[in-house]
Amino acid sequence: MAIDPSEHLRELDATLTSIEKVLDVPSLRQEVERLEVEASAPDLWDDQAKAQVVTSRLSFVQGEINRVTSLRQRLEDVGVMFELADEMGDDDTRGEADRELDAVAKSIGELEVRTLLSGEYDSREALITVRAEAGGVDAADWAEMLLRMYTRYCERHGWQYEVYDTSYAEEAGIKSATFAVKAPYAYGTMSVEQGTHRLVRISPFDNQGRRQTSFAGIEVIPVVEQTDHIEIPEDELRVDVYRSSGPGGQGVNTTDSAVRLTHLPTGIVVSCQNERSQIQNRASAMAVLQAKLLERKRQEEQAKMDALKGDTAGSWGNQMRSYVLHPYQMVKDLRTEVETGNTTAVLDGEIDDFIEAGIRWRRTGS
Image (cartoon, rainbow, N blue to C red; front, side, top):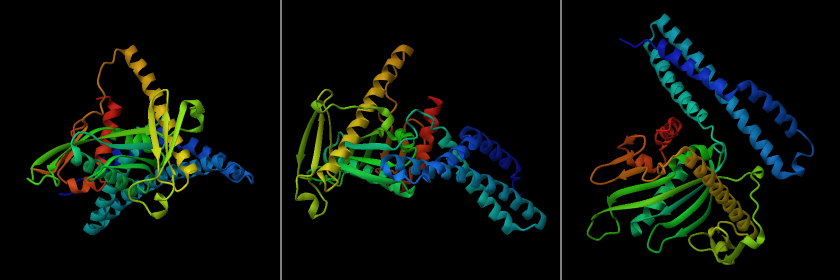
């Protein structure tokens, strides 16, 4: 006997109503009207940076409104589909309604997770660094596998990303790589991936085919915006230029276009070599350095708050996920207990369940 979907529909309606209140759809509509006026100004592109902010925000807010209104319409339509199926006694229509109900429930769940991203920097773009840790050549290979996992995740979601710098290991893989994810709420979404990722497998680099455990670390920080006021005096910087290395077309490697910035007071070093122009590389490296200084400031402020609260808990990010490829197949998040045996899909960027659970886990403060 088929299950009555009416209760499920009522639950989804209540959830979507709550989401609409959190997002404050009327305010979003007012913001669209204001942004449309700004976007239609004839002198908008005289200031390209401002123009990009306005048009990007307009596109994002319009997308949010369309997403909510579309889900509301789909939820109403699926209710009608069930009524028609019952009236006609049509199993095909009922099956189609069941499938659409599952799809709508999934979409509402994803949007509900988005509403949990209410931190100060959650709505920003993200800078992600992948670093090989313990494990030698296997760790370097593992870091490259994680870089691919995250870039595939971005591609699956239609998120633009740009790799700023890659430091290749001698035998295989990478020592580190830094890339920007240029999508709204990228930081809030991806920040739950920060921490140490452990891989257990038969090493392809071991002639005796022994099992190897290797580690890679993920750092996620928010991109700096104009309102952050991160000023870096020139006398606090050391700038080195050098020839780009590693894979990359002929033009990349023939000039000293790569740029390395060292912030003398903190010792923070960043580099960028993906552009052909030294000027472009310096601008990208400066953006990364400003983001790292902003994150340093945020962490110092958080440490003060934790001290006031008497919070002595360690970082939740350390040892956060385990990937086992031998003797069995399993990826398990050590914070949320979410796990799957489909390791191939995970390493191909299908990590939505882990990220959603991580966002919910962080919100509950578990």
